[in-house]
Length: 128
Image 1 (cartoon, rainbow, N blue to C red):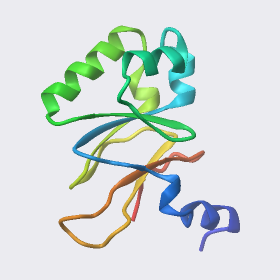
Image 2 (image 1 turned 180 degrees about the horizontal axis):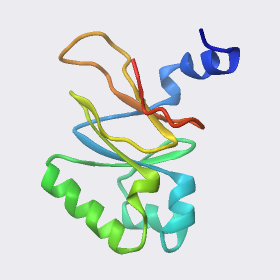
Image 3 (image 1 turned 120 degrees about the vertical axis):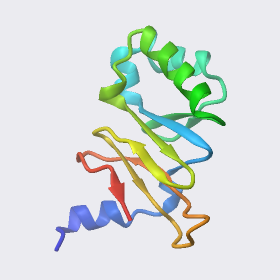
């Protein structure tokens, strides 16, 4: 049994989530503001095609090698990825989690689960 606050958060509409496509690295804006040189504004400048929601930013790659290169470059600039970055695949869902980001599905179809990410104050990172 969940309390009303938790139920409200879990039942938020999918429109409040950031869709996962291909391989997606999701970052909390608070983490970027605290650790990326120039904060969120410079992150947006460095990654002009980043997806964005109210509390999250995400970069998408077609391959794990390409995503790893992007993450290495971001980490080289000083951002602690373990503190503010989670990674998910559009078919299998979460690969790496972090506090402040949770993943959930919008469909029960096995080939199109509709994975999404949203900011959360709790440490949980997978919801079905």
